[in-house]
Length: 410
Picture (cartoon, rainbow, N blue to C red):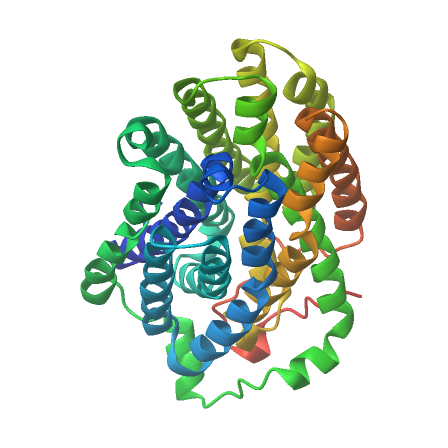
């Protein structure tokens, strides 16, 4: 990283910050589910439907903005993405009813769905090939970093601004636009592809790589259950099941999101030595012995320790994903296909919050049990599915098309 040019560092920062601020806007919601439910005189499962809807429409955004990024470039479409998700985060604060709130979260979800694929392709196509594992971990660490920012803002500002004020603060990502406009250039790989007038048609790619696409959707469904199943209802678990005050919830959330960032960078960097598959499988497997401490312990210290270890492993496995998906897909689909399969996996996993909250309420508000069931099952499934994938460490994505390795799933 220290050998990168200033341009490469600017691109890395912009991509990381875009994903961080997108995640920040998403995770503000998980801290105020119970407050929104009380405001609109309904239950938490009804409000958690907003999480499901946001996740469910993200494939639309991934396809829409990914296709635009293949045609018009990564940089301008990323800027449009940021404007849109900031705007509808702002509108969420002014929701006069639960119905209006759900509508704004749906449109926000479309905008959110485009950021991951566009920002990751911009980063992976700009930084040196030898640094892709580390950059993958850094980029994906933006997700828990956004959660961390939401945790800090919740702890510092919630008592002053309430749940509506939290969404107003969520419009701040728009301040990233000047930096991208003045300091971030277009992807050199996209510019070279445009000069060669390469086709950006998606359907031929889907037809010829349908096995790979199905595999990746299944894999990303498990990954999204792994992530959302251990994060989205955790603040509710701490508040409702254990009765912790907002300050304690914020401290625990800060600690496990620091762990998540550390895990993403650690396993992303490790994947340059062990390979992508092995790094993911190690992280997912090590989450299993942490489950009892994470979901069933008592006291803020032990629960905090369990949360720290769990998120180190969960986001450690995730830290390898951006680089691995970029290496797996064909060269002319990196802005659309990784994000699209990722968000289709999110669509499958979008039922998680409603599912877990319903299971928890059916068992006396036992959120720990509901989260442990999901996390344990998908950790095992990730290990199994990843074992069938192709190892891609060392592929040069910046090479000319005829020099690239055939890395389709076989």
